[in-house]
Length: 247
Image (tube, rainbow, N blue to C red; front, side, top):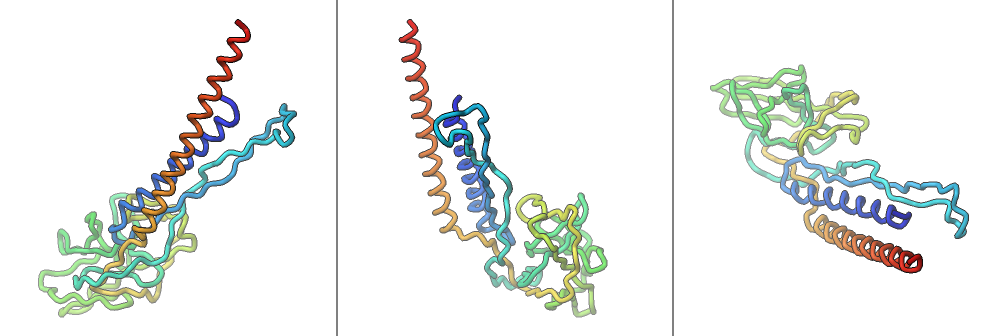
């Protein structure tokens, strides 16, 4: 395969990756706390030391998939009236305990699980500011959660929700569509989190915009595929002519 073939293959790989990311965003348009993903591509220059002509033929420019970043702006707030639906209107993440250790999420849909523990949609316990699961008793029927994360019932204070922030949010590693692993990043407590009770933060994906982008990327993929097909035909024609001359 010659240089044009490698170049168009790198373009096809880029378009395929971009399409996958956009399709993933569309699929999570209704996932609470989901953050839209964006691929990051860069130019990769390959040097051809033996290339003499044409002028400028010593370098070939390819496309390289470098990373994926998240749009971290807050998603739309939805009033639910459920006392265990919580939304962070400011910076930060809820902390939950998983079988893999402490993880972090913006998805604030919680329920009462086994043993009276407040758990997320995967059954992971919500943690307090001491790093312990928060539990309610059977006679705690009126749950009130204040803006700073303090949880109260008619029987008194039950604890304070642990909310943390990170210096480099983009370094968090996604585990699924709602939970993040901090990795080497150190969580820092948010002293005054802005929590709203009975409200759920939705996905920050804008479905119409994502579908428009997806359509454009699919069209670009089709153009690149057509170019690759024509390039293959050109090479086949060239080989046939060379063989005819030799015969």
